Length: 264
Image (tube, rainbow, N blue to C red; front, side):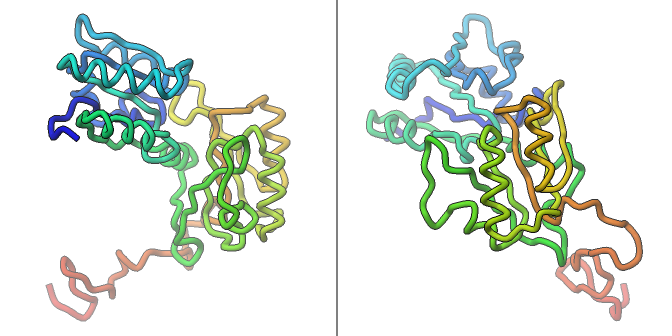
C-alpha cells in the first residue's frame, strides 16, 4: 500500500453538521471527490465542498463500483473523502473497502466521528456507565439479513444486564424485545429508542422494555433509530446516596490530587 494517503474514510457524526470533527471538515473542503453514504449523511456537507469538487451518493452502488471509483480517482492524483455516518468503525462496512484499496496499492486513512450512540445518549441526557449500576456498554445488533455469531445472540448478551445499544434493528423491535427478556432483562428495565439523533426531526421515545415496541410502531419508525436498554437509563435521583463516581471522591488519591488526609 502506498504511504501517500489518497482516500480518507470519514465519520460524519450522527447528523448535525456541526458535529463533524475539525479534521473531517478540512479534508472534505480539500477533497476532489466526496463519496457519501447519502441516505444517512447530512446533505449540507455539499456546502463544504470546494468549487469543482464532485459529490456522489453511494446508496445505489455496489462495493465494486465504490472501490473502482475511489481507485480511479486516487490514481488520477485526486483526493477522495469517503464519508460514512457516525463513526465508520461501527457498522460502517469499511473493512472490505480498505481491503480493496490495499490490494490496489492505494493509501488510505480513517478519520473518526461521533457515533450515533453518543448522539442518542446526549439526546436522552444520560450517562451510560453509572457507578454501581452499569460499567459496561454492549454495542450490538439483532440478526437479520446479516447474521451474527451464535455466541453473540441478543439473548446471550442480555444475561449481563448491562447497558446495551442495539443498532440496525428497530424494524425488528418485537424480536429484539423478545430476545432481551428471554435473556434476562426484567420487563420493567428502562428502554429508549432515539430516531435520527441530532437531526432536526430527532424523536426520543422512553419507557420500559415492555412498552418500547408499541411506542415504536405507533410512531411508524422502521429504520435510522437506535434501541438502548439498561438500568443506566433510569432517571437518577441526584441526592444523598445516589451512585457517585470514585474519581471525584475526596478520599480518592491519584497523581493530580491527594487524598482527604493530605494537605494541599
